[in-house]
Amino acid sequence: MVLTKQLKEELYKIDGREFFHSEFNLNWAIQASVEPTVIFDIGAYDCGDAIRFKNHFAHAEVYSFEADPERAKKIKEYIWEYRVNFYDHAISSIDGDIEFYPCVSDTFAQGSIYQHTNRYKTLYANVNQLEKIMIKSKRIDTFCEEKKITSIDIAHIDVEGAEMEVINGLGILRPKILYIETLAGCFDNKISIQEIHEKLVSLGYELIKDYISNRFYYHT
Image (cartoon, rainbow, N blue to C red):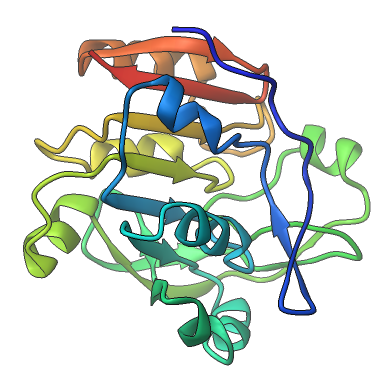
């Protein structure tokens, strides 16, 4: 499988509004022979990627999740216009309450269920992590059972160090495409990128492209 060029992180402009979007290239789905009908955007920030997915794959159901209560509140003001299914809770390996650290920044940054390490603070000195709060969390398999979703075509995951938590919540589900954003050594979860890779390989995934901080996996 050959993938076209990775995008740059930049603003997605639509209807006079500006939203953030990741480096995921929408052409990758076609190149992976995937015609998505169900797409998960986990760690939505402002739902820019979810909106982009919905506009490009009009017949797909797009489910977007943002754990930060303040961000979620703002998203709810406009997301209904874009036909995206939005949920204001975390996705992790548990159903129930979970600790979460919101953050503030003068650029794009997301909260996490893990605290920042000194490496993160050095790399992103403009980001300040706030005191922890308690938020709601669900496993992917629990959510899908409740919504009667039997398969996922694309899972776009940007969860600031909680990648393994999301993976462990899959249960028997195997999204055809997993696009995972990672920041090595930046969170106090002690989980390495290699451990995440080995877990995904054990679940039947093949690493198609390593973009250093982002990885494209395909379920074979």
